[in-house]
Length: 206
Image (cartoon, rainbow, N blue to C red; front, side):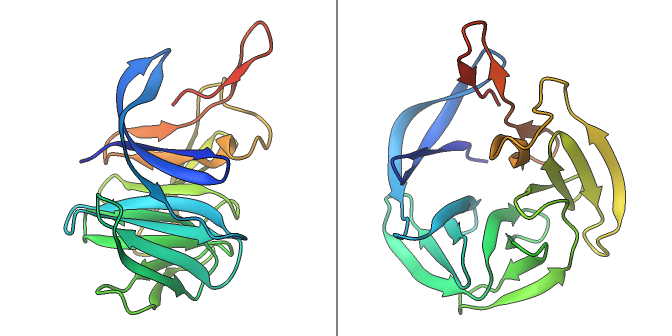
């Protein structure tokens, strides 16, 4: 599985390979792969790598329909279109080799591939918050996080199966976006926490 980091700088989303561990978290280094697209009034909301096609899907949230893109590793566009939801996260699910999108209203949708501009509703009203990040793990179940609380939902029914609270260093208030970023490699979970140093400087280890 490829590991990558997304950095938002002056409105540009840069996809770079990630590597190394420092201060308890990953740090980004290596070669810039390409710049992800961002519309003038849109908000980049997520990226998913599809190993079946060796391509990257990205989605912009904040409006309906949402802009969606598929790019090859060299940055070439294979898809530049829209889907009829307000997408807020996009994730690849290895168990069924599909790409899923969470929308602002709490629904989980499968992106219909080959791409035809449509999505299929899978679950409704299963997430804690409209901006929750989500991931698949534990056999393909759905996980989300908000303010340090992680919940697991059954992929087939949406029923809540378990929940747990993260390290106390995790923000206890709505520090967006650090309160709702979550990723998984299938067995481990990665979140971003906010930490203040003695001189007041904030950093955000994974």
